[in-house]
Amino acid sequence: MNQIGAEELFFVYGSMTQGLVHFQKIQDFVVAQEAAALQGTAYSLKVGFPVVLEGGLDLIEGELVTLKGSATLVSLLDQFHGFDQDRPEKSLYWRKKKEVQTASGYQECWVYFLNPKHLPKTATPIENGDWRTAMQSKPALIGQLSERQKMYIQRLGAATGREIIPIDLQLYRELMNLEMIVDKGRRLALSKLGHEVCRYLG
Image (tube, rainbow, N blue to C red):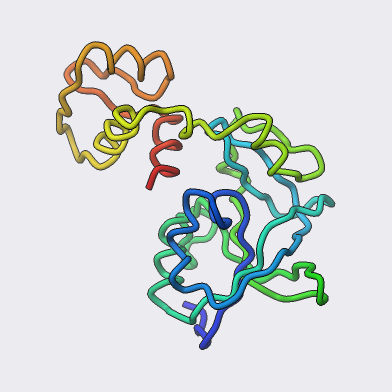
């Protein structure tokens, strides 16, 4: 792992920004934060949250956060993003050092870019990289789910092997209509969309 300093700078966007679902993963470590912009290409996932690919000319708005240096925190963020520095080509995301633009000038920081190999076919380009406007016009799917639906998706996501998670007929119909689950005969499993939603519930 790269040597971790007393403080580390990360550019965050989408679900990792303040007020959204994954900010809680870093909020206790935040020393400072400011508005920033990164050059790249943004896509909207079917679940409603954005991902950013390296390359492209759009200026993608986000936040530059200064985090207390912690090898454990960086390791957890890598794990959450599916980044393995020993096998980057197989990783879901890449963690790279990039310059971002702030009010006070350019700053070098860590950025998690989606590995293009893992961009879903259902992802749609976000015009000008403006993911906030995209999320306003198409709110995140998790905000439309009931607590009961969320809990069942999380239980299925945590299940191992051929474990059978009981379900009632009404919930079964709801989640099938939402394309969150697939029926494998003797047991239910999350669909690709279900797995994506589960990731944003955690």
